[in-house]
Image (cartoon, rainbow, N blue to C red; front, side, top):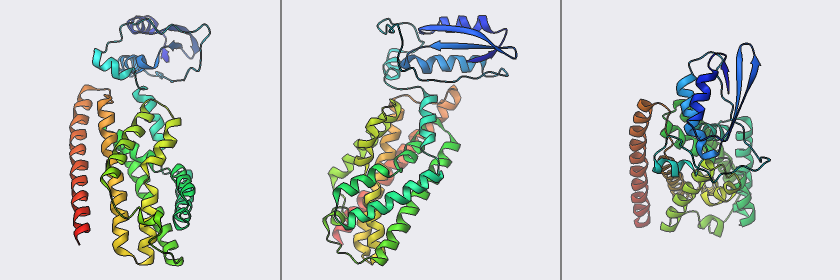
Length: 328
């Protein structure tokens, strides 16, 4: 943390009230003081919030968050200190990274960058080829390549934080990703003749109850993987979420003129999309991820409740449409 000189005593007094491991301070030039604070993941958010509330108005104030891979001597994490959290909040905080770290990680995978668009194009091609060849391994590869999970997590996080910029970026990425995938698969569907009874296609033209629970569970797993910064779990989540295959099947069937089957694949995609966003909202809410300021947090809670209701309503509508489609 960098802060103007003259506030060293206040910083030390504030940090001593937090559950920190060690503090280092030194002059950084330009009348600034550099503090290096070592603390555990579960104590980072409460400490960061206190520092931001007290010193963020100062010119030159800045906090940089860096991961610590290891420490010699080893850190004794058995001792517990006061961090200003209630027992319930402390139990939740101990299981996730800070709000700022989570925001940075999610924002990085939510932007419609050139790499995002390129990966969407490649994954759409791979998914279409895998489906047409009934090749499960190739389809799984497309799921891993597809970058569609990030923007959906970004939209959920933007909702609980009432962050309009993140929401706008995430929606742009979702729309761009879905649009690109549909266009590519429709073109392939027009150019290539195939049998719609291929298992890889037929399995993605209907929505089963188990698939709804799978999408919901996958959304929860994806949210937890982001909040705990366990990147290794995201590979499995990407495969389980399965946003891209039904979208590619929809485009292929639409391009080949199998409109009834195409509606089934599109409904499956929409159900997965809604379940992921709804479960993401619930997970972030349960983990008490909220804005720093109390008034902003209050407004964010209202928006979160409204969004949960909207997603739940859309899911009910989709389930009704699925039942109507089966009757027709």
